[in-house]
Image 1: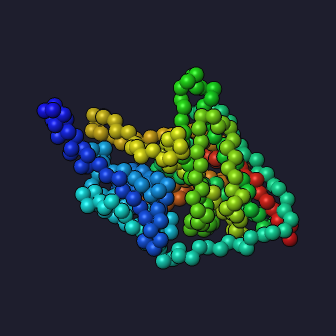
Image 2: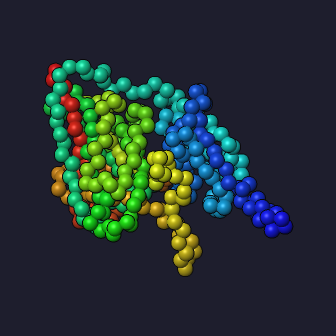
Image 3: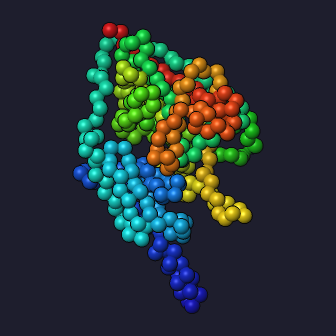
Length: 319
């Protein structure tokens, strides 16, 4: 009995410092799914589908404040010592009414496939992390009303490098869309949560069906972005784990963002610059073209592999 009491006493502080918090809408009280949780040090994580995230001072000893954000809501911050169990996000006044891009078409259409570009070269791939978001630009076809029915996403599950029984993974991704503002991704276009799971059984091209979301391309074009949320459990639920590693060096502890499988093949086979990136916990979330102005030391950029070959199946309506 004494040993049991001693064990409970030792565990008590850890239990007190761990907390599950939920992010909710101030008007509907619905969960704000996959909200961004920034630690203010260039690192962060995401809430799950029910708006839940776990914060523990034992896990994040040096974090004293959190900043919570989501598309269409005002950002809010808290000291970790005063973190409530429920966080309420208020809608951003400027985004209370969604941008209407075009009326839905109901006539005849032709299917137009924009072929994706992929490969299996491990060393010519982007290693996705939760801090990075990759966007690709799409235009209307022939100036006609065009709907994105599917996204064709090149992935590299490293099948040829895997040993039998190893390197299994289950990764949750999110797709988001943005308007075109002077050649860069601009305002977010809300289509609901477009989230999907990729495992080691998927390889080369992942076909994501968007038919029900009615994603029409505006006259100025649209950006489709791909972002890692983290690893998922067998039920496809986001696992609440640290998204970076801490490595001891002579200069102290260095934080390195965790990379997630599958890898994203980048290519030098596409003409022009169609790919843009941003680090969601750095540089005020600013988008940058993926070229030497982004990172002149990037081996992908140095070798000319500066485009992610995302493809699409379009429905081009006949007017």
